[in-house]
Amino acid sequence: MPDAATTAVFPRAQIGAGMYESFYLRVTAPNEPLGGWIRYTVHKRPGEQPRGSVWFTLFDARAGAPLMHKHTSDAPRVPAGGWIAIGDSGGGQAPTGHDVEGGSISPGQASGRCGPASWSLRWESDEAELRHLGAPFLYRAPLPRTKLTSPAPCARFNGAIELAGRPAITVDGWRGMVGHNWGAEHAERWIWLHGVDFDGAAEAWLDVALGRVRVGRVLTPWVANGAICLDGTRHRVGGLTARGAHVREDAHGCALELVGERGLALQAQAIVPDHTAAGWRYSDPDGSEHDVVNCSIAELELDVKLPGKGAARVLHSAHGGAYELGMREHDHGVALAPFADG
Image 1 (cartoon, rainbow, N blue to C red):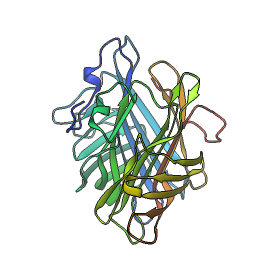
Image 2 (cartoon, helix red, strand yellow):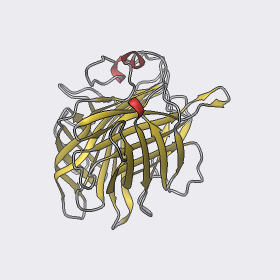
Image 3 (cartoon, helix red, strand yellow):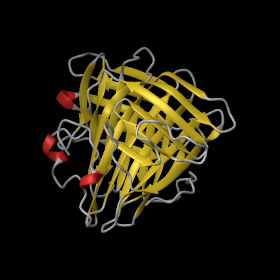
Image 4 (cartoon, helix red, strand yellow):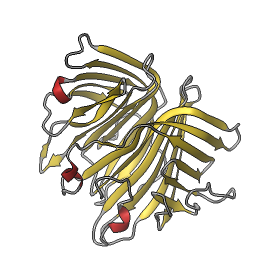
């Protein structure tokens, strides 16, 4: 992948290689526990052609369990000027017709139709892309097997989400993000934590991914990569050489203690509201699977100690957090959506 541009990786995959790729976004309403998480993905087994899927999840704490749907089709493609198009999407326009499913995502816009949901969203961001892996060569090297970036780690969205049988949801200045990841296999276990809409710090954001990798019979310690932005200044969190990560996690949330550049110390707690987690099944190209729990309206509290800045700063977001946990076990208590992957 080029070092300075967001582009799809799957068109360059060799026929004998296995890989996955995902472009995704999350949006969250500013004044209520309502949000969306939309993914456009490619799954390719060794020796086979890639298949594309659109995944839609709507979170609404007042309604209980999230609305989830997925549509899979052959021959994902890269539209002109865009990143990825799935199914019958026109590469920038929402699919037309009640029975047509698909979607596309391009710089600044995303659209699609999936089951009972359709959406047309635009976003703007003043933030530069976040490359979680600090060194450019790591995006070209075989390891780590999972690569990730956020083309827009903090963005403002406008548009609409429509659901069959209910009024359209107007997205007017909602905050969120746009992400991109790909690789030969998923980490053995991972956490993704994102946060916006902090009380008294409207422009602050957090975007951190943590992973454990299995090397033979050994499971490595947690490694964190990402950043936090405060008062317009971005501070890197974690890194391959960072030590001292402490992690407690389950399907209901997490408590993290992480270190960052020049002595930064970060404590983060994410809490998933009851019955609001979405459960999905992710497949690796080798046929193995992970259970994945995601809540994009999580409560999030941060305790940030910046070097030379005196007392720690506490940030709270009532429902602006996204918490995702990928795992092998199946006894986490979150029902999985009835859609296969791969």
